[in-house]
Amino acid sequence: MKKILFLATVILCSSFIFGQGNNYVQDYTKFQGLALTPPMGWNSWNKFACNVDEAMIRQQADAMVSSGMRDAGYEYINIDDCWHGGRDSLGFIFPDAKRFPSGIKVLADYVHSKGLKLGIYSDAGSQTCGGRPGSRGYEFQDALKYAEWGIDYLKYDWCNTEGLKAEGAYKTITAALKKAGRPMVLSICEWGTDAPWKWAQNVGHLWRTTGDIYNCFDCVKDHGTWKAWGVMQILDKQAGLRQYAGPGHWNDPDMLEVGNGQLTPAEDRAHFSMWAMLAAPLIAGNDLRNMDEQTIGVLTNKEVIAINQDPLGIQGFRYSIKDSVETWLKPLNGGDWGVVFLNRNKGKTISVNHNWQEKVIVDSVADRTLDTRKINYSVFDCWKKISLGNTSTPLKISIPPHDVMVVRLKAMR
Ligand code: GLA
Image (tube, rainbow, N blue to C red; front, top):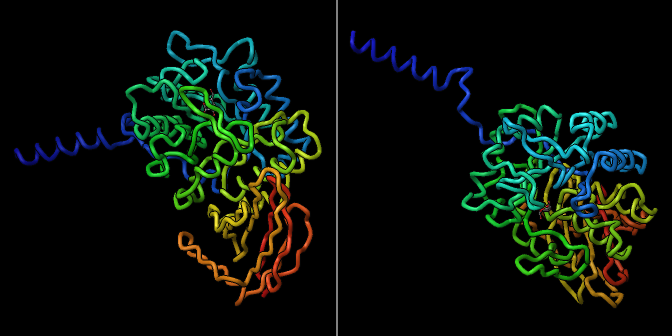
């Protein structure tokens, strides 16, 4: 009898703990099936910093459609820092009433009506980097609000996080999003400090690998307590990380500076091409409302985007450096390859004579081989949009300073 009573108690207790309706078992894993290719979109920070409001965000959504960016694959309109107003008496977050008088839900409805998705920003600490209310201690309430508003993407920053550990903090917000129930992409923004590539594959969909990008091609901006990095500096910091990227979990070398006026047309092209090769999220950071033809041409280059959005999701790698020209390779679906020649020299045009057949290239990380002696590939120039013959003859090109040549190799069978 005692045994039966004991068993009955055990069954009763475990049904409380594991049973339905139990509200305190958490799921610390991200929503599956999102960001199967690197997310594409726009974010307010690089151009507008704290100057965000609903009219401007709506206009960006309009421009994403009218510029052809939506049709080229861009999807997310992401509000970064400084949208916050405060917390109500119950602790729920609300937006700045002057900047977002209609509220975030109305904005989300508008963005959705354009066939786009809305992203928002918070921080794991007590305050955001811009000094607005952070989510620490309010994670579940914030997630509920975001879900109620119809948010699709959360960028979660790492300022003012004294005493917190990144893995635990990001798992908490993931659990909160899961509990709120609306699928959201989680963009982890702890600048690579705690090597998120080692623990975040099931926690978030992308993770920043470095500190902030700075709007220059090849420089470092020293802010005293922290540094911001030029495009080339960020590129170099990606070494050794490609094994961690793949569908649903990407290395994020930060948002684009294309069209923000400091880079030359060649540098804009090079920046965009390298992000494509890195299988990086393509999050534009410029004002979409007044782009010139050159900027639109870069951001909507279908062939370069196809290299970025390739379904295999294999991050590219630097294969060689010669006379300041780097050769990068990216295995693509169907046995194709993306190849980039990047001239890092600021002042000199460099001639390249590339003999495709010189070596068999083995990518041991992705287990792919490029053997042009066995298979002949057609060579297509993704910027000039012309055929450059095939891999049976060497490629003779010259690359202007800070420019790239991007080609796609297609197996001829
Ligand atoms: C940090 C992030 C940036 C941006 C700002 C906002 O610096 O890394 O991308 O979100 O905060 O304050």
